[in-house]
Image 1: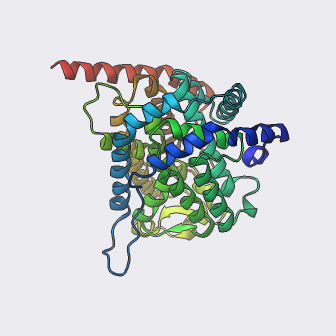
Image 2: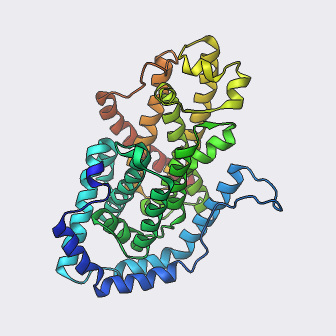
Image 3: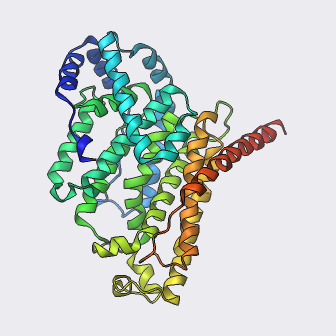
Length: 391
């Protein structure tokens, strides 16, 4: 990942400098300032004079504001998408190259998900690739080969770079693709900032006292992806669900995926001195940090893991409710992601809850078989919704 985190070739940089001086960039910055005039959603930090609020309450506010932003800006962005086209052949070619590079990265690191995106419209497919690449690059800053050199100051610079690309000033090809994406869809900057906040947290925090703390972390590093993606995925024209409920379902899928990652990687994280499990719940189960660092599967551990897996599945169930409300072309990749991650939980159980020394994974053959299952599920949900609408 270090090969593409912050670099492009010199020829690309020359073309980029010409593009950034173009009339299109000026027009898009003017449009961005119009868009950013809408209130931005942010997490309210409790003060001495304000009551302490749970993570769920604070994140709920973000979801509501994101949904309101999507509703308010949907028509504006559709008008913008028809006027934000690049006006020169060189800039058009550069943008196509940027999106192609994003697609290549997605195809290499998320093969199954990439295949699912091929059913989406070209504009949405390319936008999802751009979002995926930005999220991967951000994650690599604290979990990649050069993560030992990442400091809070480096993440502050990454956030400044994020602000610049949202305002139409991309630094490289990958930024260029995302900068175009956020000009075409009602995507707010706050979930991106919140993801960076999660990366900062990873630099300083290695344990979580309560599930409320862990939930906030899961929102930062994964739930945010759902909020970024809904405006691109699109909502079914005949959906009767509220926009906020669809955003909530997307948030739930991100949280469920991250909880699954945590349960799968307990042993790997422990070897790095990290425990992403609620300390209070461990204690209630009669377990301690030493039990995790010693990596012994006991009856107490199995019982504890059953409860953790049950909670992750509850989030998957909540997420599943929103898939049928998405645009028909976007359901398959989302459904595939949900099914595959659920199977990781199944694999943990099949390993007798030994997530210390055995890695739970879904084999290639099973992944391939999951594709038609996910597709059939989306058709079934769509058919059910139509039948309900008729009755």
